[in-house]
Image (tube, rainbow, N blue to C red; front, side, top):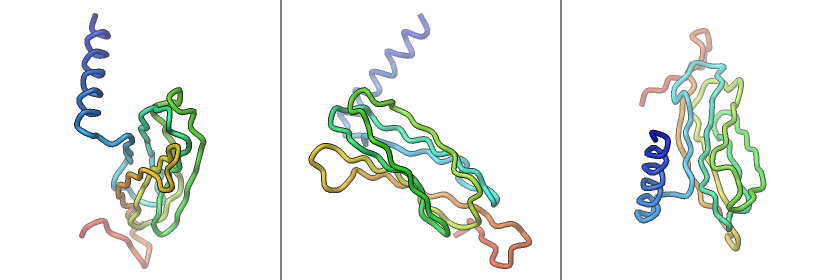
Length: 129
């Protein structure tokens, strides 16, 4: 019975979010602040839709990386997780971009995170403003 209630609440929340124009994708980066060299977990949520065709995700900063995959429209997995390893100190912007049928530019979501340099690094990075 509890599972049914949780599922019903989830469906109600998704319906309300769609009415409010919530984004079709989101990106969670963990940890938001870490010490280098760091391993960062990125979790992308992409709402399944028949028009979804392709997505890319990655990060830009002192080093950059990107990975792209095809999407199976409305049968694609909703959530994907990856780990980016050995990021050096610096400020980064993580992103997820989704291309739909007929779009020339993607729907894009960005989030920032920071890797603090090791204390012995002469070019030490801090995450404060």
